[in-house]
Image 1: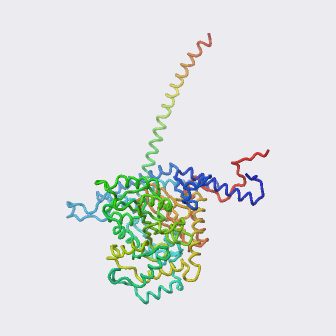
Image 2 (image 1 turned 180 degrees about the vertical axis):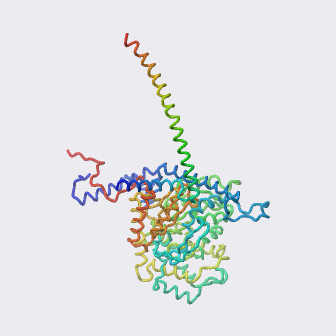
Image 3 (image 1 turned 30 degrees about the vertical axis):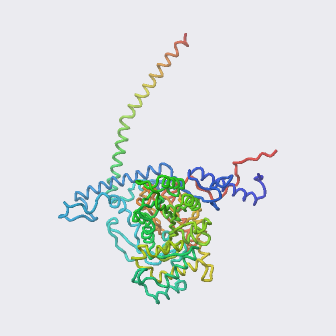
Length: 553
Length: 81
Protein backbone atom coordinates (compact mmCIF):
# COMPACT_ATOMS: atom_id res chain seq x y z
CA UNK A 1 0.00 0.00 0.00
CA UNK A 2 1.23 3.49 -0.66
CA UNK A 3 2.80 5.40 2.15
CA UNK A 4 0.18 7.88 3.41
CA UNK A 5 2.69 10.69 3.49
CA UNK A 6 3.40 10.41 -0.24
CA UNK A 7 2.96 13.13 -2.85
CA UNK A 8 0.26 15.58 -1.78
CA UNK A 9 -2.12 15.10 -4.74
CA UNK A 10 -1.65 11.37 -4.75
CA UNK A 11 -2.37 11.22 -1.04
CA UNK A 12 -5.62 13.11 -1.27
CA UNK A 13 -6.88 11.11 -4.22
CA UNK A 14 -5.97 7.81 -2.62
CA UNK A 15 -7.56 8.95 0.59
CA UNK A 16 -10.81 9.99 -1.07
CA UNK A 17 -11.16 6.65 -2.76
CA UNK A 18 -10.51 4.78 0.44
CA UNK A 19 -12.92 6.90 2.40
CA UNK A 20 -15.60 6.39 -0.23
CA UNK A 21 -15.09 2.65 -0.17
CA UNK A 22 -15.20 2.54 3.61
CA UNK A 23 -18.31 4.65 3.75
CA UNK A 24 -19.98 2.58 1.06
CA UNK A 25 -19.22 -0.65 2.85
CA UNK A 26 -20.23 1.00 6.13
CA UNK A 27 -23.63 1.91 4.78
CA UNK A 28 -23.91 -1.53 3.20
CA UNK A 29 -23.41 -3.25 6.53
CA UNK A 30 -25.35 -0.99 8.84
CA UNK A 31 -28.56 -0.44 6.97
CA UNK A 32 -29.14 -4.13 6.56
CA UNK A 33 -30.43 -3.85 3.00
CA UNK A 34 -28.17 -5.35 0.34
CA UNK A 35 -26.84 -2.64 -1.88
CA UNK A 36 -23.54 -1.32 -3.08
CA UNK A 37 -20.57 -3.41 -4.07
CA UNK A 38 -18.38 -5.62 -1.94
CA UNK A 39 -14.71 -4.88 -1.84
CA UNK A 40 -13.55 -8.09 -3.43
CA UNK A 41 -15.95 -8.21 -6.35
CA UNK A 42 -19.43 -7.34 -7.54
CA UNK A 43 -22.17 -8.75 -5.33
CA UNK A 44 -24.72 -9.34 -8.09
CA UNK A 45 -22.42 -10.76 -10.69
CA UNK A 46 -22.23 -8.52 -13.72
CA UNK A 47 -25.90 -7.46 -13.75
CA UNK A 48 -25.29 -3.94 -12.50
CA UNK A 49 -22.92 -1.93 -14.60
CA UNK A 50 -22.66 0.86 -12.07
CA UNK A 51 -23.06 1.04 -8.31
CA UNK A 52 -26.60 0.98 -7.02
CA UNK A 53 -26.69 2.86 -3.75
CA UNK A 54 -29.94 3.29 -1.89
CA UNK A 55 -30.51 4.66 1.57
CA UNK A 56 -33.36 3.69 3.85
CA UNK A 57 -31.90 4.63 7.15
CA UNK A 58 -33.92 3.97 10.27
CA UNK A 59 -34.26 6.77 12.75
CA UNK A 60 -33.21 6.29 16.38
CA UNK A 61 -35.79 4.57 18.56
CA UNK A 62 -36.76 7.64 20.55
CA UNK A 63 -38.07 9.25 17.36
CA UNK A 64 -40.60 6.47 16.81
CA UNK A 65 -41.64 6.65 20.47
CA UNK A 66 -42.15 10.41 20.32
CA UNK A 67 -44.07 10.10 17.05
CA UNK A 68 -46.49 7.75 18.73
CA UNK A 69 -46.74 10.13 21.70
CA UNK A 70 -47.71 12.89 19.28
CA UNK A 71 -50.31 10.74 17.57
CA UNK A 72 -51.61 9.61 20.95
CA UNK A 73 -52.16 13.16 22.14
CA UNK A 74 -53.82 14.01 18.83
CA UNK A 75 -56.11 10.99 19.09
CA UNK A 76 -57.17 11.79 22.65
CA UNK A 77 -57.93 15.36 21.67
CA UNK A 78 -59.79 14.04 18.66
CA UNK A 79 -62.02 11.96 20.89
CA UNK A 80 -62.61 14.98 23.09
CA UNK A 81 -63.60 17.14 20.13
CA UNK A 82 -65.84 14.43 18.70
CA UNK A 83 -67.52 14.14 22.06
CA UNK A 84 -68.10 17.88 22.17
CA UNK A 85 -69.46 17.83 18.64
CA UNK A 86 -71.75 14.88 19.31
CA UNK A 87 -73.24 16.61 22.35
CA UNK A 88 -73.80 19.85 20.52
CA UNK A 89 -71.29 21.85 22.55
CA UNK A 90 -69.38 22.63 19.39
CA UNK A 91 -70.39 23.47 15.85
CA UNK A 92 -70.25 20.64 13.32
CA UNK A 93 -68.51 21.59 10.10
CA UNK A 94 -68.58 18.33 8.18
CA UNK A 95 -71.56 16.94 6.37
CA UNK A 96 -74.26 15.36 8.47
CA UNK A 97 -77.61 13.82 7.71
CA UNK A 98 -80.83 15.70 8.13
CA UNK A 99 -83.02 15.13 11.18
CA UNK A 100 -85.53 13.09 9.17
CA UNK A 101 -82.84 10.68 8.03
CA UNK A 102 -81.40 9.83 11.44
CA UNK A 103 -83.06 6.42 11.51
CA UNK A 104 -81.92 5.42 8.04
CA UNK A 105 -78.73 3.61 7.13
CA UNK A 106 -75.96 6.10 7.85
CA UNK A 107 -74.89 8.04 4.80
CA UNK A 108 -71.71 9.54 6.18
CA UNK A 109 -69.59 7.02 8.06
CA UNK A 110 -68.48 9.20 10.89
CA UNK A 111 -65.70 7.28 12.49
CA UNK A 112 -63.77 6.56 9.32
CA UNK A 113 -63.15 10.25 8.88
CA UNK A 114 -61.73 10.53 12.38
CA UNK A 115 -58.23 11.14 11.13
CA UNK A 116 -59.39 13.67 8.51
CA UNK A 117 -61.58 15.57 10.95
CA UNK A 118 -59.20 15.76 13.83
CA UNK A 119 -55.64 15.70 12.53
CA UNK A 120 -55.70 16.59 8.85
CA UNK A 121 -57.96 19.61 9.33
CA UNK A 122 -55.47 21.21 11.70
CA UNK A 123 -52.71 21.33 9.10
CA UNK A 124 -54.86 21.50 5.99
CA UNK A 125 -53.54 24.90 4.98
CA UNK A 126 -50.38 23.25 3.65
CA UNK A 127 -52.17 21.46 0.82
CA UNK A 128 -54.29 22.59 -2.10
CA UNK A 129 -52.53 25.94 -2.20
CA UNK A 130 -53.73 27.72 -5.33
CA UNK A 131 -50.96 28.97 -7.57
CA UNK A 132 -51.34 31.68 -10.15
CA UNK A 133 -48.42 31.30 -12.50
CA UNK A 134 -46.67 28.58 -14.46
CA UNK A 135 -45.14 26.00 -12.09
CA UNK A 136 -41.59 26.62 -13.21
CA UNK A 137 -38.61 26.80 -10.86
CA UNK A 138 -40.35 29.72 -9.19
CA UNK A 139 -44.02 30.48 -8.99
CA UNK A 140 -46.60 32.78 -7.43
CA UNK A 141 -48.99 31.74 -4.72
CA UNK A 142 -52.30 33.22 -3.79
CA UNK A 143 -52.24 34.16 -0.17
CA UNK A 144 -54.95 32.52 1.92
CA UNK A 145 -55.86 32.92 5.53
CA UNK A 146 -58.27 31.08 7.73
CA UNK A 147 -60.41 32.45 10.51
CA UNK A 148 -61.73 29.23 11.93
CA UNK A 149 -58.71 26.93 12.10
CA UNK A 150 -58.67 25.65 8.52
CA UNK A 151 -62.33 24.78 8.11
CA UNK A 152 -62.79 27.64 5.64
CA UNK A 153 -60.29 29.81 3.80
CA UNK A 154 -60.48 33.21 2.26
CA UNK A 155 -58.11 34.91 -0.13
CA UNK A 156 -56.64 38.20 0.95
CA UNK A 157 -56.09 39.24 -2.67
CA UNK A 158 -52.31 39.41 -2.35
CA UNK A 159 -49.99 37.13 -4.30
CA UNK A 160 -46.78 35.83 -2.83
CA UNK A 161 -44.32 36.23 -5.67
CA UNK A 162 -41.33 34.12 -6.71
CA UNK A 163 -41.69 31.29 -4.30
CA UNK A 164 -39.04 28.67 -5.07
CA UNK A 165 -40.83 25.61 -6.31
CA UNK A 166 -39.57 22.37 -4.80
CA UNK A 167 -42.75 20.42 -5.24
CA UNK A 168 -43.68 20.39 -8.93
CA UNK A 169 -42.72 17.44 -11.10
CA UNK A 170 -40.91 19.68 -13.47
CA UNK A 171 -37.81 17.52 -13.86
CA UNK A 172 -36.53 18.89 -17.13
CA UNK A 173 -37.93 22.37 -16.79
CA UNK A 174 -40.28 22.16 -19.78
CA UNK A 175 -43.04 23.94 -17.88
CA UNK A 176 -42.10 27.35 -19.24
CA UNK A 177 -43.81 30.34 -20.83
CA UNK A 178 -40.97 31.44 -23.08
CA UNK A 179 -42.58 32.59 -26.32
CA UNK A 180 -39.88 31.18 -28.58
CA UNK A 181 -40.11 27.79 -26.99
CA UNK A 182 -43.88 27.65 -27.36
CA UNK A 183 -43.97 28.93 -30.93
CA UNK A 184 -45.07 25.65 -32.49
CA UNK A 185 -47.61 25.08 -29.75
CA UNK A 186 -49.31 28.41 -30.47
CA UNK A 187 -49.38 27.60 -34.21
CA UNK A 188 -51.05 24.26 -33.52
CA UNK A 189 -53.47 25.91 -31.12
CA UNK A 190 -54.54 28.30 -33.83
CA UNK A 191 -54.78 25.52 -36.39
CA UNK A 192 -56.65 22.87 -34.37
CA UNK A 193 -58.24 24.66 -31.44
CA UNK A 194 -58.45 22.83 -28.16
CA UNK A 195 -61.31 20.37 -28.36
CA UNK A 196 -61.34 17.00 -30.05
CA UNK A 197 -64.92 16.07 -29.22
CA UNK A 198 -64.45 12.43 -29.99
CA UNK A 199 -62.73 9.24 -28.95
CA UNK A 200 -59.77 7.60 -30.65
CA UNK A 201 -61.88 4.97 -32.30
CA UNK A 202 -64.50 7.31 -33.68
CA UNK A 203 -63.14 10.53 -35.09
CA UNK A 204 -60.56 11.52 -32.56
CA UNK A 205 -57.37 10.29 -34.19
CA UNK A 206 -55.57 13.26 -35.67
CA UNK A 207 -52.36 13.37 -37.65
CA UNK A 208 -50.81 14.94 -34.55
CA UNK A 209 -51.46 11.73 -32.63
CA UNK A 210 -49.86 9.62 -35.34
CA UNK A 211 -46.85 11.94 -35.41
CA UNK A 212 -46.57 11.84 -31.63
CA UNK A 213 -46.86 8.07 -31.49
CA UNK A 214 -44.11 7.51 -34.05
CA UNK A 215 -41.93 9.99 -32.19
CA UNK A 216 -42.49 8.26 -28.84
CA UNK A 217 -41.70 4.87 -30.37
CA UNK A 218 -38.52 6.33 -31.87
CA UNK A 219 -37.53 7.95 -28.59
CA UNK A 220 -37.92 4.76 -26.59
CA UNK A 221 -36.47 2.45 -29.21
CA UNK A 222 -39.54 0.25 -29.54
CA UNK A 223 -41.78 -0.78 -32.39
CA UNK A 224 -44.92 1.18 -31.66
CA UNK A 225 -46.61 3.35 -29.03
CA UNK A 226 -50.05 4.66 -28.20
CA UNK A 227 -50.85 7.86 -26.35
CA UNK A 228 -53.77 8.61 -24.06
CA UNK A 229 -55.19 11.82 -22.74
CA UNK A 230 -54.69 11.16 -19.02
CA UNK A 231 -51.79 9.52 -17.24
CA UNK A 232 -53.80 7.95 -14.42
CA UNK A 233 -56.33 6.58 -16.91
CA UNK A 234 -53.52 5.04 -18.97
CA UNK A 235 -52.82 2.64 -16.12
CA UNK A 236 -56.29 2.10 -14.80
CA UNK A 237 -57.90 1.57 -18.19
CA UNK A 238 -55.24 -0.50 -19.92
CA UNK A 239 -54.33 -3.07 -17.30
CA UNK A 240 -57.88 -4.50 -17.45
CA UNK A 241 -57.42 -4.87 -21.19
CA UNK A 242 -54.21 -6.84 -20.77
CA UNK A 243 -55.11 -9.19 -17.91
CA UNK A 244 -58.35 -10.74 -16.74
CA UNK A 245 -59.69 -13.56 -14.59
CA UNK A 246 -57.34 -16.46 -14.27
CA UNK A 247 -54.26 -14.27 -14.55
CA UNK A 248 -51.87 -13.41 -11.77
CA UNK A 249 -50.63 -9.91 -11.01
CA UNK A 250 -47.53 -9.52 -8.86
CA UNK A 251 -47.45 -5.94 -7.74
CA UNK A 252 -44.91 -4.04 -5.69
CA UNK A 253 -45.91 -3.02 -2.18
CA UNK A 254 -45.64 0.69 -2.87
CA UNK A 255 -47.23 0.92 -6.30
CA UNK A 256 -49.20 3.97 -7.27
CA UNK A 257 -52.98 4.05 -6.91
CA UNK A 258 -53.48 4.00 -10.69
CA UNK A 259 -51.72 0.63 -10.94
CA UNK A 260 -53.66 -0.76 -7.98
CA UNK A 261 -56.94 0.46 -9.42
CA UNK A 262 -56.18 -1.03 -12.82
CA UNK A 263 -55.19 -4.33 -11.19
CA UNK A 264 -58.38 -4.49 -9.16
CA UNK A 265 -60.58 -3.55 -12.10
CA UNK A 266 -59.12 -6.34 -14.17
CA UNK A 267 -60.43 -9.09 -11.88
CA UNK A 268 -57.12 -10.95 -11.81
CA UNK A 269 -55.59 -12.33 -8.63
CA UNK A 270 -53.22 -9.85 -7.04
CA UNK A 271 -50.25 -10.81 -4.91
CA UNK A 272 -47.95 -8.26 -3.37
CA UNK A 273 -44.20 -8.53 -2.94
CA UNK A 274 -42.04 -6.41 -0.64
CA UNK A 275 -40.83 -3.15 -2.01
CA UNK A 276 -38.00 -3.69 -4.53
CA UNK A 277 -37.23 -7.01 -2.91
CA UNK A 278 -36.28 -9.57 -5.55
CA UNK A 279 -36.16 -12.50 -3.12
CA UNK A 280 -39.78 -11.88 -2.14
CA UNK A 281 -40.75 -11.67 -5.80
CA UNK A 282 -38.91 -14.85 -6.66
CA UNK A 283 -40.64 -16.70 -3.87
CA UNK A 284 -44.03 -15.55 -5.14
CA UNK A 285 -43.15 -16.56 -8.69
CA UNK A 286 -42.05 -19.99 -7.63
CA UNK A 287 -45.19 -20.51 -5.58
CA UNK A 288 -47.33 -19.33 -8.46
CA UNK A 289 -45.76 -21.75 -10.89
CA UNK A 290 -45.66 -24.70 -8.50
CA UNK A 291 -49.14 -24.35 -7.05
CA UNK A 292 -51.02 -22.73 -9.88
CA UNK A 293 -54.46 -21.18 -9.41
CA UNK A 294 -55.88 -21.48 -5.90
CA UNK A 295 -58.91 -23.68 -6.42
CA UNK A 296 -58.41 -25.81 -9.48
CA UNK A 297 -54.59 -25.94 -9.48
CA UNK A 298 -54.41 -25.14 -13.17
CA UNK A 299 -51.53 -23.09 -14.50
CA UNK A 300 -52.03 -19.34 -14.48
CA UNK A 301 -53.05 -17.97 -17.85
CA UNK A 302 -50.60 -15.12 -17.53
CA UNK A 303 -48.28 -13.82 -14.85
CA UNK A 304 -47.55 -10.10 -15.00
CA UNK A 305 -45.27 -8.08 -12.74
CA UNK A 306 -46.23 -4.44 -12.10
CA UNK A 307 -43.42 -2.13 -11.05
CA UNK A 308 -42.55 1.53 -11.33
CA UNK A 309 -39.32 3.08 -12.59
CA UNK A 310 -38.98 5.55 -9.75
CA UNK A 311 -41.28 5.32 -6.77
CA UNK A 312 -42.49 8.80 -6.03
CA UNK A 313 -42.79 8.48 -2.26
CA UNK A 314 -39.50 6.73 -1.63
CA UNK A 315 -37.28 7.96 -4.40
CA UNK A 316 -36.07 4.43 -5.02
CA UNK A 317 -35.26 3.06 -8.45
CA UNK A 318 -36.48 -0.40 -9.45
CA UNK A 319 -33.88 -3.18 -9.66
CA UNK A 320 -34.44 -3.72 -13.33
CA UNK A 321 -31.57 -6.09 -14.24
CA UNK A 322 -32.54 -8.61 -11.57
CA UNK A 323 -36.19 -8.20 -12.43
CA UNK A 324 -35.62 -8.93 -16.10
CA UNK A 325 -33.52 -11.98 -15.35
CA UNK A 326 -36.27 -13.26 -13.01
CA UNK A 327 -38.94 -12.64 -15.58
CA UNK A 328 -37.02 -14.52 -18.23
CA UNK A 329 -36.38 -17.44 -15.94
CA UNK A 330 -40.00 -17.83 -14.85
CA UNK A 331 -41.59 -16.66 -18.12
CA UNK A 332 -43.62 -13.79 -16.70
CA UNK A 333 -44.47 -10.43 -18.29
CA UNK A 334 -43.16 -7.11 -17.07
CA UNK A 335 -45.17 -3.88 -16.97
CA UNK A 336 -42.95 -0.92 -16.17
CA UNK A 337 -44.56 2.37 -15.19
CA UNK A 338 -42.00 5.06 -15.93
CA UNK A 339 -44.10 8.02 -14.81
CA UNK A 340 -41.34 9.65 -12.83
CA UNK A 341 -38.32 8.19 -14.54
CA UNK A 342 -38.87 8.95 -18.23
CA UNK A 343 -36.82 12.01 -19.03
CA UNK A 344 -35.42 12.16 -15.52
CA UNK A 345 -32.86 9.33 -15.40
CA UNK A 346 -30.65 7.79 -18.02
CA UNK A 347 -27.78 9.34 -19.92
CA UNK A 348 -30.06 10.85 -22.57
CA UNK A 349 -33.26 10.87 -20.56
CA UNK A 350 -34.75 7.64 -21.88
CA UNK A 351 -35.66 6.30 -18.46
CA UNK A 352 -34.58 3.41 -16.26
CA UNK A 353 -34.08 1.06 -19.20
CA UNK A 354 -31.27 3.28 -20.43
CA UNK A 355 -30.07 3.98 -16.90
CA UNK A 356 -29.25 0.31 -16.43
CA UNK A 357 -27.91 -0.05 -19.94
CA UNK A 358 -30.56 -2.57 -20.96
CA UNK A 359 -32.51 -2.96 -24.15
CA UNK A 360 -36.19 -1.93 -24.28
CA UNK A 361 -37.02 -5.35 -25.73
CA UNK A 362 -36.53 -6.81 -22.26
CA UNK A 363 -39.59 -5.02 -20.92
CA UNK A 364 -42.89 -6.18 -22.33
CA UNK A 365 -45.03 -3.13 -21.63
CA UNK A 366 -43.40 0.26 -21.26
CA UNK A 367 -45.77 2.80 -19.81
CA UNK A 368 -45.10 6.41 -18.95
CA UNK A 369 -46.67 9.79 -18.53
CA UNK A 370 -46.03 13.12 -20.13
CA UNK A 371 -47.08 15.07 -17.06
CA UNK A 372 -43.78 14.94 -15.24
CA UNK A 373 -40.81 15.57 -17.49
CA UNK A 374 -42.52 16.94 -20.58
CA UNK A 375 -44.67 19.66 -19.08
CA UNK A 376 -47.86 18.38 -20.71
CA UNK A 377 -50.57 15.89 -19.81
CA UNK A 378 -51.30 12.34 -20.79
CA UNK A 379 -49.64 8.97 -20.91
CA UNK A 380 -48.35 6.40 -23.33
CA UNK A 381 -47.96 2.67 -23.62
CA UNK A 382 -45.19 1.37 -25.83
CA UNK A 383 -43.86 -2.01 -26.81
CA UNK A 384 -44.18 -4.50 -29.63
CA UNK A 385 -46.49 -3.63 -32.49
CA UNK A 386 -48.82 -6.54 -31.67
CA UNK A 387 -49.31 -5.27 -28.16
CA UNK A 388 -50.10 -1.73 -29.22
CA UNK A 389 -52.44 -2.88 -32.00
CA UNK A 390 -54.27 -4.99 -29.46
CA UNK A 391 -54.62 -2.02 -27.14
CA UNK A 392 -55.90 0.20 -29.92
CA UNK A 393 -58.93 -2.06 -30.24
CA UNK A 394 -59.40 -3.38 -26.73
CA UNK A 395 -58.47 -0.59 -24.34
CA UNK A 396 -61.28 1.20 -22.53
CA UNK A 397 -59.45 4.44 -22.95
CA UNK A 398 -59.28 4.11 -26.71
CA UNK A 399 -62.93 3.28 -27.04
CA UNK A 400 -64.46 5.69 -24.57
CA UNK A 401 -62.09 8.43 -23.54
CA UNK A 402 -61.53 11.62 -25.46
CA UNK A 403 -58.14 11.69 -27.08
CA UNK A 404 -55.31 14.06 -26.27
CA UNK A 405 -55.82 17.62 -27.41
CA UNK A 406 -53.51 18.89 -30.21
CA UNK A 407 -51.67 21.76 -28.47
CA UNK A 408 -50.74 19.41 -25.66
CA UNK A 409 -49.58 16.83 -28.20
CA UNK A 410 -47.48 19.52 -29.87
CA UNK A 411 -45.91 20.46 -26.53
CA UNK A 412 -44.88 16.84 -26.07
CA UNK A 413 -43.55 16.69 -29.61
CA UNK A 414 -41.44 19.78 -29.15
CA UNK A 415 -40.14 18.63 -25.76
CA UNK A 416 -39.26 15.21 -27.11
CA UNK A 417 -37.58 16.64 -30.19
CA UNK A 418 -35.59 18.91 -27.92
CA UNK A 419 -34.57 15.91 -25.79
CA UNK A 420 -33.58 13.83 -28.80
CA UNK A 421 -31.68 16.72 -30.36
CA UNK A 422 -33.89 16.81 -33.47
CA UNK A 423 -34.41 20.55 -33.19
CA UNK A 424 -30.76 21.10 -33.95
CA UNK A 425 -29.62 22.17 -30.48
CA UNK A 426 -28.08 20.30 -27.56
CA UNK A 427 -30.52 21.91 -25.16
CA UNK A 428 -32.22 18.62 -24.34
CA UNK A 429 -29.01 16.87 -23.38
CA UNK A 430 -27.96 19.91 -21.36
CA UNK A 431 -31.20 19.74 -19.43
CA UNK A 432 -30.74 16.06 -18.65
CA UNK A 433 -27.19 16.67 -17.48
CA UNK A 434 -28.21 19.70 -15.43
CA UNK A 435 -30.87 17.62 -13.72
CA UNK A 436 -28.36 14.90 -12.88
CA UNK A 437 -25.94 17.49 -11.51
CA UNK A 438 -28.62 19.21 -9.46
CA UNK A 439 -29.83 15.87 -8.09
CA UNK A 440 -26.38 14.77 -7.03
CA UNK A 441 -25.56 18.13 -5.46
CA UNK A 442 -28.83 18.40 -3.59
CA UNK A 443 -28.67 14.89 -2.22
CA UNK A 444 -25.04 15.14 -1.26
CA UNK A 445 -25.57 18.39 0.64
CA UNK A 446 -28.60 17.02 2.44
CA UNK A 447 -26.69 13.91 3.47
CA UNK A 448 -23.84 16.04 4.74
CA UNK A 449 -26.17 18.17 6.81
CA UNK A 450 -27.40 15.10 8.59
CA UNK A 451 -30.98 14.68 7.38
CA UNK A 452 -32.45 11.27 6.73
CA UNK A 453 -33.07 11.02 3.01
CA UNK A 454 -34.61 8.01 1.35
CA UNK A 455 -33.99 6.62 -2.07
CA UNK A 456 -31.39 6.07 -4.72
CA UNK A 457 -28.58 8.57 -5.16
CA UNK A 458 -29.60 9.22 -8.77
CA UNK A 459 -33.29 9.83 -8.37
CA UNK A 460 -34.54 13.44 -8.56
CA UNK A 461 -37.30 12.69 -6.05
CA UNK A 462 -35.86 13.44 -2.60
CA UNK A 463 -37.97 12.49 0.43
CA UNK A 464 -36.76 14.09 3.66
CA UNK A 465 -38.11 12.34 6.73
CA UNK A 466 -39.98 14.39 9.31
CA UNK A 467 -41.56 11.60 11.40
CA UNK A 468 -43.63 13.62 13.88
CA UNK A 469 -47.09 14.91 13.00
CA UNK A 470 -46.49 18.29 14.64
CA UNK A 471 -43.44 18.88 12.50
CA UNK A 472 -45.32 18.33 9.23
CA UNK A 473 -47.35 21.50 9.63
CA UNK A 474 -44.50 23.48 11.16
CA UNK A 475 -42.09 22.53 8.38
CA UNK A 476 -44.37 23.49 5.53
CA UNK A 477 -45.42 26.78 7.12
CA UNK A 478 -41.92 27.85 8.05
CA UNK A 479 -40.63 27.02 4.58
CA UNK A 480 -43.40 29.13 3.06
CA UNK A 481 -42.39 32.02 5.30
CA UNK A 482 -38.94 31.74 3.78
CA UNK A 483 -40.53 31.82 0.30
CA UNK A 484 -40.00 28.17 -0.54
CA UNK A 485 -42.90 25.92 -1.51
CA UNK A 486 -42.62 22.28 -0.47
CA UNK A 487 -44.91 19.28 -0.50
CA UNK A 488 -45.29 17.44 2.78
CA UNK A 489 -46.91 14.03 2.99
CA UNK A 490 -48.43 12.37 6.00
CA UNK A 491 -50.29 9.33 7.05
CA UNK A 492 -52.52 7.76 4.43
CA UNK A 493 -49.94 8.12 1.66
CA UNK A 494 -47.01 7.00 3.81
CA UNK A 495 -46.66 4.64 6.82
CA UNK A 496 -47.91 6.30 9.97
CA UNK A 497 -44.52 6.91 11.55
CA UNK A 498 -42.78 8.05 8.38
CA UNK A 499 -44.21 11.35 7.33
CA UNK A 500 -41.94 13.25 5.01
CA UNK A 501 -41.32 16.31 2.90
CA UNK A 502 -40.78 15.46 -0.73
CA UNK A 503 -38.53 17.61 -2.90
CA UNK A 504 -38.53 17.33 -6.68
CA UNK A 505 -35.31 18.67 -8.12
CA UNK A 506 -35.63 20.29 -11.52
CA UNK A 507 -33.19 21.06 -14.31
CA UNK A 508 -34.50 24.61 -14.24
CA UNK A 509 -33.26 25.19 -10.71
CA UNK A 510 -30.09 27.24 -10.63
CA UNK A 511 -27.31 26.65 -8.14
CA UNK A 512 -28.37 29.79 -6.25
CA UNK A 513 -31.92 28.57 -5.82
CA UNK A 514 -30.71 25.22 -4.54
CA UNK A 515 -28.34 26.96 -2.16
CA UNK A 516 -31.15 29.16 -0.83
CA UNK A 517 -33.25 26.10 -0.23
CA UNK A 518 -30.35 24.24 1.39
CA UNK A 519 -29.56 27.12 3.73
CA UNK A 520 -33.19 27.39 4.74
CA UNK A 521 -33.24 23.63 5.33
CA UNK A 522 -30.10 23.90 7.45
CA UNK A 523 -31.68 26.53 9.69
CA UNK A 524 -34.98 24.73 9.90
CA UNK A 525 -33.25 21.44 10.56
CA UNK A 526 -31.59 22.94 13.61
CA UNK A 527 -34.70 24.76 14.79
CA UNK A 528 -37.06 21.81 14.37
CA UNK A 529 -34.40 19.23 15.26
CA UNK A 530 -34.74 17.19 12.07
CA UNK A 531 -31.17 16.04 11.63
CA UNK A 532 -31.60 12.49 12.81
CA UNK A 533 -29.03 10.78 10.63
CA UNK A 534 -26.30 8.90 12.41
CA UNK A 535 -24.14 8.51 9.32
CA UNK A 536 -23.70 12.05 8.07
CA UNK A 537 -20.62 12.45 5.92
CA UNK A 538 -18.54 15.54 6.35
CA UNK A 539 -17.68 17.48 3.23
CA UNK A 540 -14.18 18.06 4.54
CA UNK A 541 -12.07 14.90 4.46
CA UNK A 542 -9.94 14.40 7.51
CA UNK A 543 -6.30 15.02 6.97
CA UNK A 544 -5.10 11.77 8.45
CA UNK A 545 -6.70 8.42 8.13
CA UNK A 546 -5.72 6.44 11.17
CA UNK A 547 -7.40 3.14 10.46
CA UNK A 548 -4.51 1.48 8.74
CA UNK A 549 -0.94 1.67 9.88
CA UNK A 550 1.94 0.50 7.80
CA UNK A 551 5.02 -0.26 9.83
CA UNK A 552 8.10 0.31 7.82
CA UNK A 553 10.88 -2.11 8.47
CA UNK B 1 -25.75 37.94 27.53
CA UNK B 2 -25.88 34.51 29.07
CA UNK B 3 -29.48 35.09 30.13
CA UNK B 4 -30.44 35.81 26.52
CA UNK B 5 -28.92 32.61 25.16
CA UNK B 6 -30.42 30.69 28.07
CA UNK B 7 -33.83 32.19 27.37
CA UNK B 8 -33.58 31.39 23.65
CA UNK B 9 -32.49 27.85 24.52
CA UNK B 10 -35.47 27.45 26.84
CA UNK B 11 -37.75 28.83 24.15
CA UNK B 12 -36.30 26.31 21.70
CA UNK B 13 -36.94 23.51 24.21
CA UNK B 14 -40.51 24.68 24.60
CA UNK B 15 -40.92 24.67 20.82
CA UNK B 16 -39.64 21.10 20.69
CA UNK B 17 -42.13 20.10 23.36
CA UNK B 18 -44.91 21.76 21.40
CA UNK B 19 -43.94 20.00 18.17
CA UNK B 20 -43.55 16.57 19.71
CA UNK B 21 -46.82 16.59 21.61
CA UNK B 22 -48.76 18.24 18.78
CA UNK B 23 -49.67 21.20 20.99
CA UNK B 24 -48.38 23.34 18.13
CA UNK B 25 -51.53 22.29 16.26
CA UNK B 26 -53.98 22.92 19.06
CA UNK B 27 -56.37 25.80 19.37
CA UNK B 28 -55.73 28.10 22.34
CA UNK B 29 -58.39 26.61 24.59
CA UNK B 30 -57.08 23.12 23.86
CA UNK B 31 -53.58 24.26 24.74
CA UNK B 32 -54.80 25.66 28.06
CA UNK B 33 -56.51 22.36 28.79
CA UNK B 34 -53.52 20.28 27.76
CA UNK B 35 -50.95 22.33 29.65
CA UNK B 36 -53.03 22.52 32.80
CA UNK B 37 -53.52 18.74 32.67
CA UNK B 38 -49.77 18.24 32.30
CA UNK B 39 -48.94 20.67 35.09
CA UNK B 40 -51.48 19.04 37.35
CA UNK B 41 -50.03 15.59 36.67
CA UNK B 42 -46.50 16.86 37.23
CA UNK B 43 -47.47 18.50 40.53
CA UNK B 44 -49.21 15.33 41.66
CA UNK B 45 -46.11 13.26 40.88
CA UNK B 46 -43.80 15.72 42.63
CA UNK B 47 -46.05 15.96 45.67
CA UNK B 48 -46.28 12.21 46.07
CA UNK B 49 -42.51 12.01 45.63
CA UNK B 50 -42.03 14.64 48.33
CA UNK B 51 -44.37 12.80 50.71
CA UNK B 52 -43.38 9.21 50.11
CA UNK B 53 -39.81 9.03 48.86
CA UNK B 54 -38.04 9.87 52.19
CA UNK B 55 -40.06 7.18 53.95
CA UNK B 56 -39.31 4.60 51.27
CA UNK B 57 -35.62 5.50 51.09
CA UNK B 58 -35.18 5.24 54.88
CA UNK B 59 -36.99 1.88 54.96
CA UNK B 60 -34.77 0.63 52.17
CA UNK B 61 -31.61 1.84 53.90
CA UNK B 62 -32.71 0.25 57.17
CA UNK B 63 -33.29 -3.04 55.42
CA UNK B 64 -29.93 -2.92 53.72
CA UNK B 65 -28.06 -2.01 56.91
CA UNK B 66 -29.84 -4.78 58.76
CA UNK B 67 -28.82 -7.25 56.08
CA UNK B 68 -25.28 -5.97 55.94
CA UNK B 69 -25.05 -5.79 59.73
CA UNK B 70 -26.12 -9.42 60.10
CA UNK B 71 -23.43 -10.50 57.68
CA UNK B 72 -20.85 -8.47 59.51
CA UNK B 73 -21.76 -10.09 62.84
CA UNK B 74 -21.42 -13.54 61.36
CA UNK B 75 -18.06 -12.67 59.91
CA UNK B 76 -16.62 -11.05 63.04
CA UNK B 77 -17.12 -14.00 65.35
CA UNK B 78 -14.56 -16.36 63.76
CA UNK B 79 -12.02 -13.52 63.23
CA UNK B 80 -12.06 -12.32 66.84
CA UNK B 81 -11.49 -15.81 68.13
